[in-house]
View 1 (tube, rainbow, N blue to C red):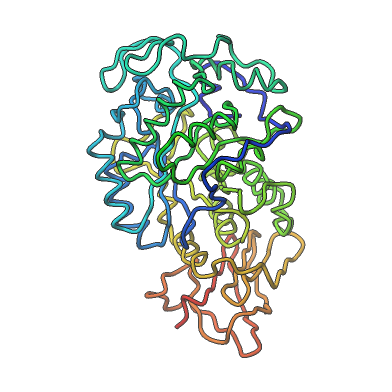
View 2: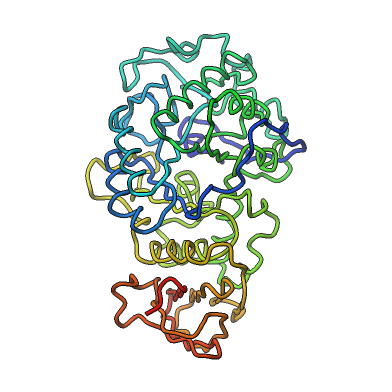
Amino acid sequence: MLHQRSRILGGALAGVLVAAGLATLAPWQSQATPPGEKTVTATLFERPYADVGRACTDQLGPAGYGYVEVSPASEHIKGDQWWTSYQPVSYKIAGRLGDRDAFAAMVSACHKAGVKVIADAVINHMSSGSGTGTGGTQYTKYSYPGYYQDQDFHSCRKDIADYGNRDDVQNCELVGLADLDTGSDAVRTTIAKYLDDLRSLGVDGFRVDAAKHMAADDMAAIKGKMSDPGFWISEVIYGGGEAVKPEEYTEIGDVDEFRYGGHLKSAFQGGSIAQLKSVADGKLSSGSARTFVDNWDTERNGSTLTYKDGAAYTLANVFMLASPYGSPNVFSGYEWSDKDAGPPSGADGWTDMHAKQEITGLVGFRNAVGDAELSDWWDNGSSAIAFGRGDKGFVALNAGDGELSETFATSLPAGTYCNVAKAAPDSCDGNTVTVGDDGKAQLTVPAKSAVALHVGAKS
């Protein structure tokens, strides 16, 4: 399913899309993975922009994150539910997360901390009704003053009914949301102007919401209208036998690989994480895939692990960061019991997944190992695995209920290493591991825990 709002607004999406055809090559050079040496993203879902700026300064920058993804910067319908952010009514930055000044200050703070900013861009649709937006804009479903009027929306004014029909998927309405005619030059120009404005505030790239509901050629045309489009990620959920497939969007930039989170859930809840040796099989190529354990939709629809899975969830994130496949995105949201519930109003209730030692330590691990190949794979056939990243790093994961004690063959240089899954390198007493001249390391890994060593964290 695409976004939990589909359930909330009364629609039932059949799944997500598979068909032939690649987007026409664009005049700009596509970027297959986030540019730069620090490729890990943290998505701070529904965090106020001022809080994101502080997180960049205090947590993300020091940990070595390359990117932070923030929730939509546009005026939206009123309401306390999280999904109101995904019903824009204008492209002013005037939502519950902060105004234009707060957004600009956040981008500046993140850049000073060495963290680039990805904005979640809702450009497939507008709202499903009428009213007054969070910034005072009065709107109706097919009229948004200064932006769009009736002729700017597709003529199919009914919900998507057939996910095997490309025209239905990309021209009809996603659960009642007014569907923009992205084939129109006027609409493309308006969207490009909005994205260019965010770029003028320092935004480095975009996560394009509901991308599968727009033709890849339409998205390429919008990107081509921009003066400097930056880095793009398309949200295109895979669905067997359906009309649109994720591969169609790889010329535009990265694509969110939804099959990855499902694979991790199967492995960690099915009792055999040994299957993760083949985690890349049947998915997008590594250079095009953005990986994640969960996001705000999947944690609510049950298709992936979530923070409620405790240690298994943490270990899945550790694996994602340690494995060479894809460009990892760490999801950091908030606790909820009501699936519709919006974000906390204060400091309490956030999961702070992005700041946990197991995660920050593995962000450093990934930066240290770079593009080193997978090596030295070991598994016990079920609940424990270990692998290296050439001579740069080594990790062991124990998803079992008992302690794991094993002597592992690694390709690491001899020395004493900090277990960064448990401690920061500058405060590692009691959490060190010795690798011998023969490359072997005796590791004791507690139940539901991990050991991670890399050459950037040696005593």
